[in-house]
Length: 503
Ligand code: GLN
Image 1 (tube, rainbow, N blue to C red):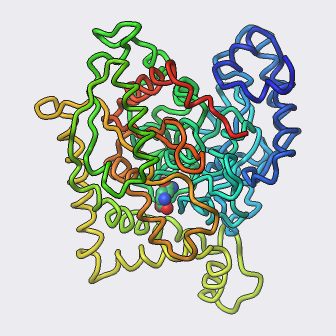
Image 2 (cartoon, helix red, strand yellow; image 1 turned 45 degrees about the horizontal axis):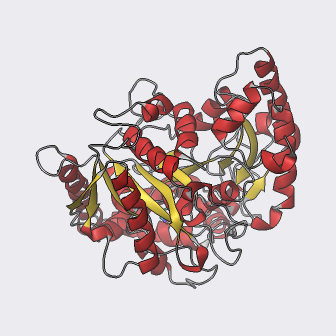
Image 3 (spheres, rainbow, N blue to C red; image 1 turned 30 degrees about the horizontal axis):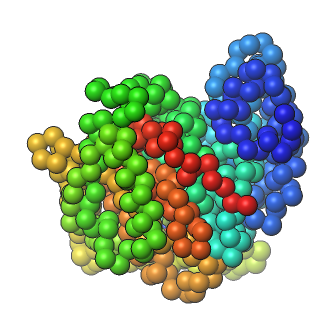
């Protein structure tokens, strides 16, 4: 197989080809390492260690030679740099896109990282992201913006912007991401790839540098639902080191995805599937190109047997103020640990302890992170707690209840809820200027599922304005990742949106 074809292969195909010994993991790894270095201008890669990667590939090749390989043995991938990676094992720093952690050598692997390593994957690189995962454009990274491979003038989305750009540009077949309020789904949508944020608690948060602990969730970003299913099976599962990890047996999402639905046929694999379209997800102000692409994908799902039903999520708009109170509140607490004492940046010159804290934090954090720490501290402060934080918590529950009304058998009985991932295609780098509110408002369609803790997915649905990709969002009930993957997989069997790539 020629080098030009190697980087076009997805996770499932690579796994099969490696087991058939059509090429080795070392050959593929070397090919992709070269590709990473020739595409440095994309800004997606923060760190890569060729020696460590090739040694992991060599170990995988030995497992393959013994005939003991699993579906992911020898498959190269990259991690969002919000996951810590054992520096001694990987040779890679863990930065969260922040000056605060520049060069930070973690003494351990995040659980998600350890599980993917145990499945035999090869770690190629750590990928750029918005600082501490706060943002929607990757412009908040201390290490520079990432370019959208479809148009280098545009953002890749965020905060998992490096992951989305690297997968779309065929630098890596797959990457990890994290999603607190949309950070897997929105960049996947902006870059035309497939990504899933599982139910809160499905993937361990251990070793994921914390932003908002009640919302943070890891997930795979790849080129197809099938590839996401393979990765999610390896990444997920109970972890006693995460207090909010869901106690469930290991899941084979790939097998679940392929399980035929009751009453389905080959031509109508989604027969009986009820897809709710919340009218609040299709407002008059929705960009016409996004609306058209989403409607086209929905029409395909209908042809596959699904029924579309009108539903309402009346508190959709409120999810913006609710999220932008709760997430900063949790961030202000989580980021308290970066004080220059135990790890991370410490100011070179300071007077007393207070001065050391102040200078360290002023130098280490970027403007968006500082803004969130201030908002979060304010909404938690005595006198404002009841008016903001407590009120937001009550509304969060009501937002979750609205979803349950759509899913419950007694009323709408939806299996899936669908709509756009974002109100527009990717915007231009710098276009939002210094107005953070603009970016916050664009999170409107991803925040509700995050606040409710529900699984959500972005599936390519063609292109909109300027030839930029548009994502269809699918939201499922708790722990029903299988139905999302099945719906996306069925769509990807009959359409080519997910195979389209930037030139
Ligand atoms: N854009 C949202 C924010 O800035 C979501 C980020 C995320 O999911 N990590 O907070």
